[in-house]
Length: 392
Ligand SMILES: NC(=O)C1=CN([C@@H]2O[C@H](COP(=O)(O)OP(=O)(O)OC[C@H]3O[C@@H](n4cnc5c(N)ncnc54)[C@H](O)[C@@H]3O)[C@@H](O)[C@H]2O)C=CC1
Ligand SMILES: O=C(O)C(=O)COP(=O)(O)O
Image (tube, rainbow, N blue to C red; front, side, top):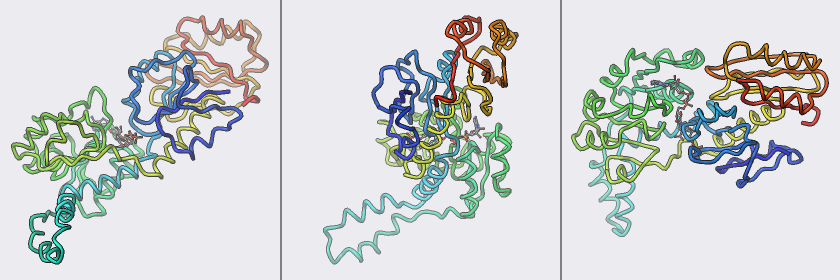
């Protein structure tokens, strides 16, 4: 039985993909084989010695100690693009609520609920206080053109906005999906100087932390509106509050509010709702569970953030999966141990990513415990697992 621990609420449609005769699912397990997580912070969580994989049902993995996992041979997955449409739709709402004073106007109308027959006249008299500009013709700057950034860019083009994007690492796939009307900013500074609205769609990493700070706000068009549906840490909160106070920034729509931001009227706080649609929750859960099953039952890796993609059809009756440091002579050492024990390799795949390498080795016959032990003893080997496909 595989033990799967869920650290957040994971959509039932995904969990139902685990056959219950092979999988136990619970939110409390002291030593699970795998973890399913959304935004729960895992950095200070102890990780048991059975842990093989962590699947993030979502995009961002900054809540997971990925480097530590890599060192221990724990594969971390995410579900690229599975919640992108959900975020895109909320960004469009963010653009609208940052422009037209929709939220304040609704609050005001509710506040006059006791004014009886006067209400229609009051509405007409006071509405000018809540006027705000259209999006059409304004410039939207998008930082990060991945799954979400591309969708936001294309939707903004459909709203007849002028869209400029910045992503020095854009993937070929993302570039193919981007409307040809989206202009390319060669530098972040160029985008920042010309945008009326700026939307962030990059991961939070050591390189992107505090990406928008006072220095950048000073370069922006006066009255710019900032949208952050990516991660709170991308924006320096003290700096944006200062920029709002000085009239440099008009509105900050954020999915990541904190105590200081909530004190400011021009901050529009949303409780991290970007991916909170039934569709996105199901898409992410289904994708995460399928990836996890394929890894646990077949050793295949798809959409990992720390391991290489590595998938092979099963050809023997025993499969070995081995993670090792990406250093010279490892394949020879591993295959030598198998050869010395007279084990025939029927098929084999070796892939690497940065400092880690991963091998799928199909063999004829069984692998005794003594041999597993010898493989684990090879210097540079991090993880060895033997899978019997017929048992899965
Ligand atoms: N509010 C919410 O509920 C959600 C928030 N997110 C956040 O949005 C982020 C982006 O999500 P996806 O688009 O799905 O990820 P993605 O991986 O498809 O796209 C990220 C893009 O950022 C680009 N990038 C990285 N560093 C950059 C930099 N310094 N400057 C410009 N571009 C840079 C990459 O090249 C990539 O194209 C996630 O990492 C996550 O933090 C994602 C889903 C839901
Ligand atoms: O996918 C992401 O990166 C998100 O931020 C979504 O977070 P959530 O799954 O809604 O807790």
